[in-house]
Length: 476
Ligand SMILES: *[C@@H]1O[C@H](CO)[C@@H](O)[C@H](O)[C@H]1NC(C)=O
Ligand SMILES: *[C@@H]1O[C@H](CO)[C@@H](O)[C@H](O)[C@H]1NC(C)=O
Ligand SMILES: *[C@@H]1O[C@H](CO)[C@@H](O)[C@H](O)[C@H]1NC(C)=O
Ligand SMILES: *[C@@H]1O[C@H](CO)[C@@H](O)[C@H](O)[C@H]1NC(C)=O
Ligand SMILES: *[C@@H]1O[C@H](CO)[C@@H](O)[C@H](O)[C@H]1NC(C)=O
Image (tube, rainbow, N blue to C red; front, side):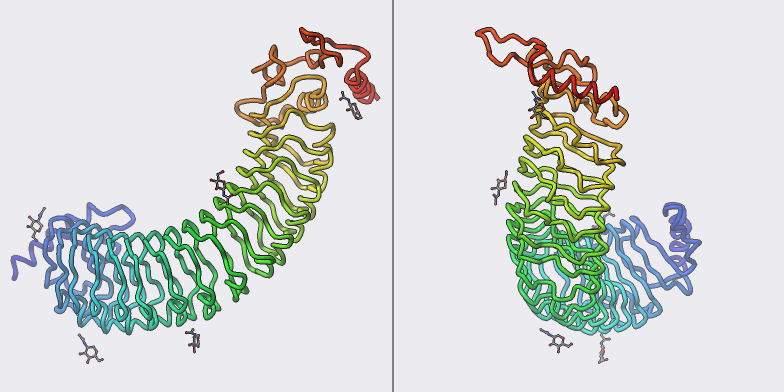
């Protein structure tokens, strides 16, 4: 017995130096840490130790009654151990246990009875293992558990009623598993739940009423699934919701008025879906929303005034869709918008007034589109504009580009694209940086093309006329 004690004393001294700086054992006089040299759960501890850590230890089994001699334990953690089995009654007798973590093991299942009678447990972390399913009864009696982390496992099924006893639960993390469905009543007893993470599973469908009893939800993570459709009244309790993650699914549409009346919502993600269109009214009464991304969808048009209720929106991302143009009406009401991302669409033309209802705009991204030119004064209403991205468009460097060219010259500090904007046409200017041109290079072909098209600056063409007008205006 004495020898064992000496060995553990020695080991714990040794481990003190192998712990990360901020986790020095001396900061935790009640903590005992075992590392890879430990292959058995010790019975005898240093006096008064209330926390057991097994870090990289060679513990393959956690047997029944493993800690029976140490009823004072408040926290037990197995981290990165090759544990393959854990027996019912493993934590037997630990009436003061508040915190269990079992992560980075080879466990494929946890039998009912492992967490039995742990009536004071508050935090249970069983992440990064290989669990396949969760059986009803596993969490029975854990009435004080507030946080349950089960993410990064291989969970495919959860029995009905599994979570029913967890009446104090505020956080349930089931992200990065293999769930393909969740039953409508799975969470119905978790009335205190604030955070529910179901992201990166295989869910195709979210049943109606699944959030019916969850009146305290602040965060719902459904991103990274295969959800194709959302039911109209999926979120009956919107009062407290702050974060809603719906990105990276297979949504092709959204119900009308789906995002109306979320007084606390700060984060809403919709990018990486397959939205082909949006209902005429979608958003409303979201006074805390400052960012919205619809990037990487299949949108080619928007209803007019779709964003107009979003008075506080600062960033709008519509990149990587199939838009060919936008109208001023699409951006109506976005009085606070500072950043508009239209990258990677198929925009071929824009009206001069397209952005005139965006008085706060600072950044506009129009790179990677199909623009050949932009109308005169398109950026003129934007007094705060200071970052403009226009590269990777097939710019036609002829007389019709003159307005844009002159604006770019006068505002070159605002042109931020890397690589810079270059001409696509005509052939002899192809690849030339627009800002490196001189104004007299921007000429139009004569209106009656001869067999060998000549590019001249015809003093009688409309183009020259417009140019002259511009110049005279500038001189005034
Ligand atoms: C780990 O423990 C098992 C028995 O529990 C033993 O067979 C194995 O050799 C140990 N591995 C190391 C690296 O100590
Ligand atoms: C669990 O608690 C019940 C009732 O409180 C008791 O009868 C039983 O012996 C306890 N089991 C263990 C393994 O401590
Ligand atoms: C919702 O909560 C109430 C009150 O806790 C409960 O009576 C009811 O059974 C719950 N609904 C479901 C579907 O479990
Ligand atoms: C969305 O676009 C992708 C790629 O462009 C395509 O594979 C997919 O079928 C489209 N989805 C819909 C619903 O149109
Ligand atoms: C000249 O300006 C007028 C009116 O602004 C416009 O309709 C016309 O298309 C312009 N012509 C050229 C060649 O840019």
